[in-house]
Image (tube, rainbow, N blue to C red; front, side, top):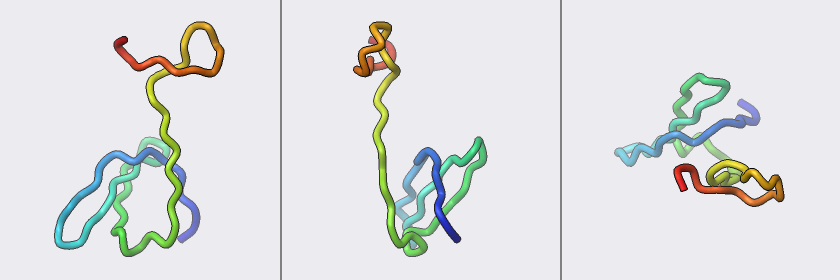
Length: 60
């Protein structure tokens, strides 16, 4: 039903695989068969204090 932007929380490997996506703080479940197209952007850690675009792994 349109474009969904959120955080991929979990992947369920069951008889019908599903994913859980957090959208604006709300959990939504989608069957993989419902997804026509997807794009994933990875964000690792937080921005470092030098503000030079690099990321720092949390806890490091």
